[in-house]
Each structure stands twice: as structure tokens, then as C-alpha cells.
Image 1 (cartoon, rainbow, N blue to C red):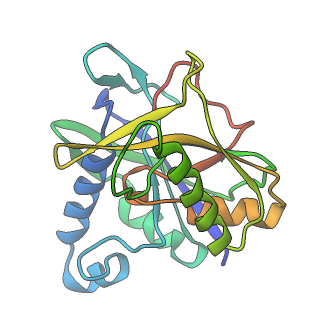
Image 2: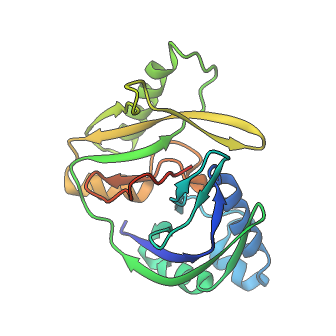
Image 3: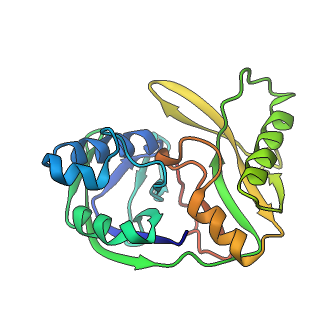
Amino acid sequence: MNFLEVQFSLRGQTLPADHGYALYSALKKYLQSLDSEQQKEFLIERNLPPDLLICSIAGIPNQNGIIYLNQNARFRLRCPAENAAQWYRILQNQVLDIRGHLIRFIQPRLTLPQASEILKARLVTFRLDNWNSNEAPVYFLESCQKRLAKLDINAQVYIDSNDQGNLAQRAIKIHGKNVLGYGVTVEGLNPEDSLKLQGMGLGGRKHFGCGWFYPVQEVDHGNEIRA
């Protein structure tokens, strides 16, 4: 399956730093407001399709859980190529309310994901029965390896480190609860597997910004943060 990425520039000023679930909720609410025939194009039983990946939005963080959007801020989604034009049209110039922060999607663009031998994801999550800080990395890596094998991807997967040299454990808040995961690097990808991983993602909560992989050479705009 071929995938395309749809990108929108943004008109707005701020967002919550941890906005992955709120962005998903606002997008779904908008799509559910469409007439029934339009909903059939974008929703499956009133939910976003499972083959849709959404990236959280990068911005400049402050100390109060807020990010400031600049001219480089983008809303990005990946989907099967045959659906890209529909998302392009339906979201163009739409305004979403993200927990009281208004953003407008403008200047849409279509692009192809670029193959890279090394891909990174800021946050990958799996449903672990118990999150024990000592054992979680083992079960997490096992889950990554099993999922890569299910995708028929042969590559090496690692948990990243943060700026302090510790494991890059991160969280996303969903329904008031912190869901934990790690930053991940996957190496040794051939071009076909690299594009497959970018198109299909890894782990859960892929509608909330998790499991989104990007090439290491992709510019990461300085101090910006993705929730």
C-alpha cells in the first residue's frame, strides 16, 4: 500500500503542549458534524479510520504547559494514497478548538514520505499490564520487535535517551490519565520497510500523535516539542 502525507500550515498562536488526544477529539467532532454521506468518506462507525496516522503539532514550549506556534508549525497526517485528496479538501480552511485554543488549517500540501535507513519516533506506546520502571523497557522492546515482525520489517529497534542521558520515557494524557511510553529509534531499514513503517506507525494511540516515525535528517525546528 502506498501512503501520502497531507500537511497544513496553521493560523493560530498557542496550543497545550500535551494536545494529542484533544486534537484527535476536535478533529473527530468536526467530522461527526458533517452530513451522513460525507461522514462515510472519513469515519468508520463514527471513528477515525485505523489506517490514518496523525502527528502532534510542534511549537516553542513555555513553563506552563503551553506551546507557541510559529511559521514552521504544521498539522500532518498520513493515509493511504487514494484517500489523501479527500482529507486535503475536507480540512482546508477549517478551524478546530483544541481545549480553548483555536487553530485554522491553511495552505495544504501533499508530499511523499522519504525513505531513510534510520527512523525516529518521539513517543511509542503499548498496552503493558503493569508499568514497572525496571521491567518496562524489556517488555516494551519485546512489543516493538513483535510488532515489527508482524509488519514483516527486519530492523533493529532501540529506546532513545533524553538530554540527561536517561531513557527517553514520555507520556501522553488521555482521559486524565498519563499513558507512558518511550522515544524510539529503528535502524537498518531498507527503503520499502522505511516507507511501510512511516505509513503504518508502531504501537497504539496513533490517532493521538504516537507511533509517528520520521527520518533522522528531518529538521526538528530547534527547541520545539511534540506532545
